[in-house]
Amino acid sequence: MATATATGTASAGRRGPARPGVAAAAVRRASSLRRGAPAAGPGRAAGAARRRARARAGAGAGAGGMEKVEEVDRAVGRDRYNPDSYEELMEDVARSVAQGLRDGVTRMEVEFPPLGSSLDSYKGQSDDYIDANIVLTIQLSKLLAKEGLATRILVPDEIEKRRAKRVFKTSLELDDRIVMGSLQETGVSSPLKGDWAQKVLGGFFAENRVQDFEGNRFTENTREDVFVVVNASCAELPTIKKYWEEFCRDKAMILLNLELDTLRGDLGLFGFPSKDIHYGFLSHFKPMFFLRNRDYSKSVNVAPFIINYSGSVFREYPGPWQVMLKQDSGTLACIAEDEERFTLGDAKYEMMEAMGLRTEEEGSTMEFLRRGYKNATWWEEAAGSELEASDAWRS
Image (cartoon, rainbow, N blue to C red; front, side, top):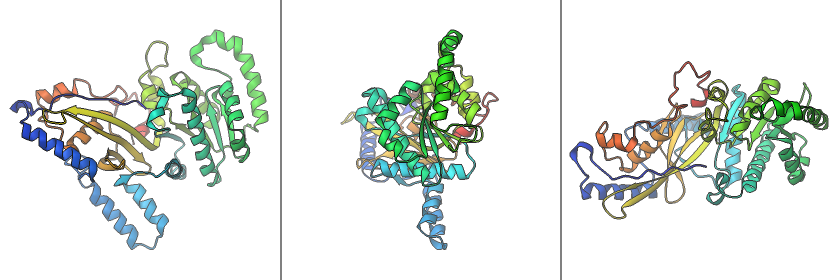
């Protein structure tokens, strides 16, 4: 996953450079907050802990058991998040997806770090990243199977599908409710390759598509309830849209670990799909489970001179969006929450606020110079715009 680094000097805006004592206090506060639980700040965090405490107290006073308490906790957000393993994380993902299906959500986004930091995203070996995502998708499919749901896993093309079926043959054969498929089942490899490719290769894909449907029982009355798209790139987004329109309108589709925020950044560029893909299609996908880690640093004029801090934008449906600050123990602690999705710029400043590193006066020249003229992306700025067909991706 992509990371961002912000550096600068700790300043006091119109009052001139920050005094060493102010910077030293910020360093001490940052260190203490990373070790312990951060207190709710004056921003979006106000009242968050009190609401969660009241919800938990109400759940405890009722007749419901552990399941009832767990459901209420998820609905009001987490104070801390630190799963012991990927198995626990995937169980959290599956619960959120199952809740979304019960609520009638049919287009879902799931995003979390699929691997450790050494192989995060495509920085490591791409095959390892691809295989890890498929392993996690199979695990999610098995958890959904316990809910009585059959899953079709969609990789970008037939070559990747055949490889995945060979590599994960044992796992796929153990449960016939999990089927491996590909986006080429629409009969088109990618709209970006042009009409000539469709004319030359269309016959091959059409033949392959018929064989695949027969071999995997894919018919108009297919029993797959959920379609999970994995390892697709920006070029495949129009094909995902076509697949949805042709096969999934009355079924559920999950976009798993596609790093949609990164893919959206390529939309509209030469040789890539237009921004309409986000406005008319991706905007309908509601995040069910979202955990995006971010690493930052800020320079100060006292030792240690550079303060590194990390956090995450987090959402676990049906709970609110949360900004989590990573502590020395690795635990993520909530510092802010909102019913609407945080932009990355807002999340960064909530972290700085909680750690006492936001020393510029609001609206000052120094704050403007630090944040810059543009601190949100084009798709984040489209809130309330008529261009967006849905605001589900923000909610």
